[in-house]
Image 1: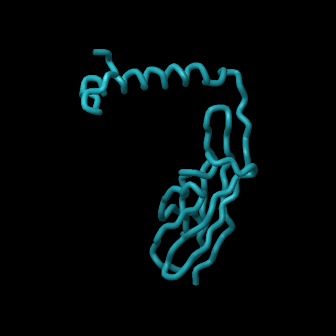
Image 2 (image 1 turned 90 degrees about the vertical axis):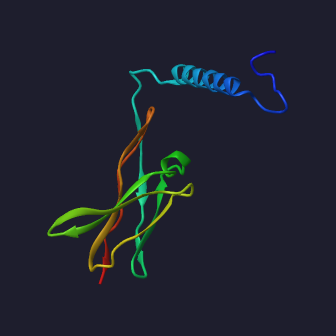
Image 3 (image 1 turned 135 degrees about the vertical axis):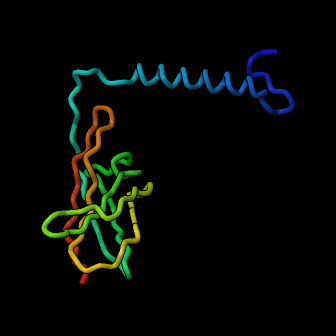
Length: 138
């Protein structure tokens, strides 16, 4: 009986563990082969982020990249900030959806708000930090 022979349509737990180990080894080997050289320079890409305040009070918006490449907008961390005594303070954090959308319920308080997407590095590709325009909540 070979390592990947099925018995009644299922792998034995030991075979499953071996298959996962083989897959992990292949994935590691693939990352080593595809990894960029240390001397490669990063290519920064521009991103934009929008912010709108709705109802009592939902902050929502979208992250977009200059070339609309999916990894630059999917699962991006977003910080929603409020200006307090001259400083920007993070009041909520969330992540974007596959379409680059985000929404977060926040406490309904008067003031100035903005959204920030920090810079990201993915291999030899980098995304610049994005800051939304300031939005007022009266």
